[in-house]
Length: 251
Image (cartoon, rainbow, N blue to C red; front, top):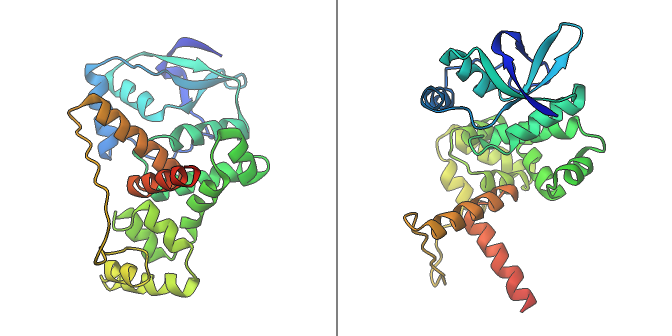
């Protein structure tokens, strides 16, 4: 692979790019990167492959960066030129998008499903190739089987990733009950009733940890915990509990 400054006019969005059908400029993330690149230079090159038939470059990774620089008026863009194409190129584009932090739980689940569908040996292949636990891959995909009212609640931020996975583990009858509650605006109470969302019981024993974002070490640790928790499909509290439990078992 090599980096070249390629004319913007010679680049097309590749069929393998997972966001090729998304319009640009409508959501806040598009506007944010457009504003950023209007003030600063591009730090990470896009990824393209050269199509010998059309004599043009096909954009695999970096769609937002490409459109933002085009809007900025740039005539050339730094690009890594790769020979990936077909399923391999699609998988690379999927994984690049998957590790972004701005994805909703449903977007992440959909991308994981597509990654599994385009990777040899499915879940096992994805786990081996990308270093993701098989259980995590399965749990992310399980969100897509939930009834539509629950998927809408996930997309609306009313159900966290961890809660969605907990619900997906429940019997279909419980999922339908929660879906009905979501339609009636009583989702939070219903989740508490079935044990997905727990209140604070009497006599609760707690350990309180405070992370001060003004302290660099605290912020770095919090961000790292958040990344590790997200990889496991958990929130930070649940991930910290798992780490402490494993440590206690070894003591």
